[in-house]
Image (cartoon, rainbow, N blue to C red; front, side):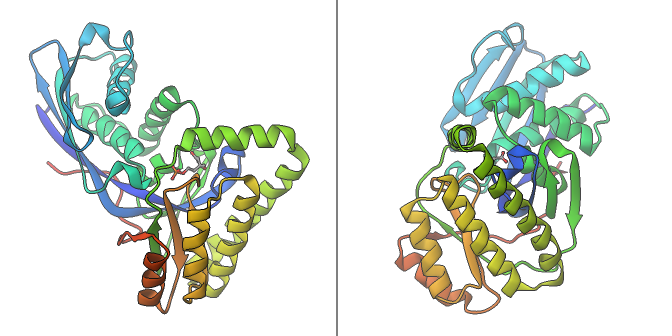
Amino acid sequence: MKNKVTVSAPGKLMLFGEHAVIYGMPCIVTAVDQRIYAKVEKTDTNLIVVNAPSLGVKSYSVELSDLGRVDYPKEVRFVLKSVEIFFRKFKVKSGLIISTKSDFSSTFGFGSSSAVTVCTIKALSGIFDIQVDDKSLFDIAYKTVLQVQGVGSGFDLAAAIWGGTIYFVGGGKIIISLKIEKLPLVVGYTGIKADTASLVRKVGYFYKSNKKEIKLIFDAMKLIVESAKKDLVVGNYTRVGDLANINQGLLDSLGVNTKKLSDLILAARVAGATGAKLSGAGGGDCMIAFSPKSKKAIEKAIEAAGGKILSVKTSAPGVRIEQ
Ligand code: PMV
């Protein structure tokens, strides 16, 4: 049993298959080298204290006896729900101080909530000396995320846990690590924070009223993911670009594209990207462009169209104990 454990986990970028993955289809996600850190310390108090300076949270505390009985503030709800579910599942409890830190802003859509959930649960398993294998970690984290935000496929949790680039089927039914040497990506941020849960709900309403048509779209997205899975591994970026463009057209037809995303995507294509699409729920956040060549020109074009270049390395390592 340890008194103090620090864990880190990577953020993520969705490459192909967003939204359809909620409906049982596969997706492909890559972990990025921007990480979230959680330090968990055991105390003799009956309080769980959370510090999350990047979210403006200083010493927010909740009594052990109030875990699961009170509403947690938005900024700390993933951390506290993780603690609540872990304590209940393993019948343990203790006062704790939990401090989180991030390499990236929570507004980018890199998955800070899922990474912090994974970090907290992994750190607790170290503190209480309880063996939790990766799949069990995924299951506990997925339960946490569903209880907090109600919707989600868990792809971001898989990226945080396993790292690398992953072929993923909703709820963790299939998780396959893809051997990809390098991923020539440019990432552009729109400057607009998207609300994933409300976009998932919006697609849900659209699906209900246009079931037959949207089912075909999801089937096409599945085909794209299956093709991309092969073409990414052999590094056929002309074809990967084509698939990105087709995927973008389909996402547009679901109603999750925005003018700003379109501006950045079109700018990237004109500047030489083999293909470009939004990444994640849409509505804002990031776009990605595949670019084996002309990377600088693509970056310039995205900036000229009002985007911010986020320089990230992909296929980053998954969750790990730092100390
Ligand atoms: O907005 P992001 O980057 O968290 O991606 C959401 C992807 C969805 O498929 C729309 C939702 C999900 O949980 O899979």
